[in-house]
Length: 315
Ligand code: GA4
Image (cartoon, rainbow, N blue to C red):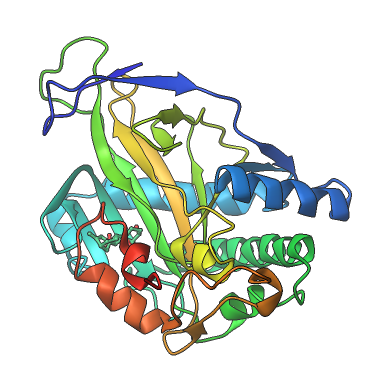
């Protein structure tokens, strides 16, 4: 695949297709834990199959999301603009980042801003399942790392957890593009939270970075979840896990919309992010302690592509 971005039209990047780790959650627990830790260390990313989230719950959420985005603009705007929660189109965050998408950003511990009861019901069942799945993965990670089982997962189980649900709709791109070229839908970034669970329809678009402009396309699989490590888990593992940089391409298939449902598992605002002593061993701690509220306000004050964890490094 060849990529030329609108902002950087002269620069052509070669995209590799690579075997991304696929982890079967129905396997033997100790082996699954070992494989997850390995994937998080090497890539900060893996695909999860046999995850146990019922198909009808995913389908209901996907149908509701498509129905929401199908509405006329004034109806979508009625939920308020994404500032930071609500409907957004082409603008990402408040710092001038742009993308070829529209989206809905929802808080998971507050009343849903979309008022129809079938939408609310779909969100509540979907979030319940993906939160539980994220906790299961975090418990396997804790097992694989030899730290207490709920060391990471208890942060997501708390009622004041700051977890989010993001529904991204990448409509077919209409402006003229050279054949075979594609454009950025959502620019390069890492996720600030602990763990992200992304699920998309069968349209490709997601790419992960292996560093040095070395991008890998993730083949779409509507039956799998893509799991990626966020900045907070990189800090909590003293840099052992990678908060993988990723991006989404738009218009990968002519006339087809891409829809992704993204759950970001986050701690409560006042929780202090530190690394368990077992993971520091002889190494020095890489990051100073910080609260999620502090990290979040730094995140929102900067651009999408910022390597924001560097700001918290101990010199
Ligand atoms: C990236 C990950 C999540 O989508 C998100 C994004 C957030 C937003 O869209 O409002 C941010 C971005 C994300 C990081 C930097 C800031 C904030 C847009 C932006 C430019 C919801 C999040 O938590 O951080």
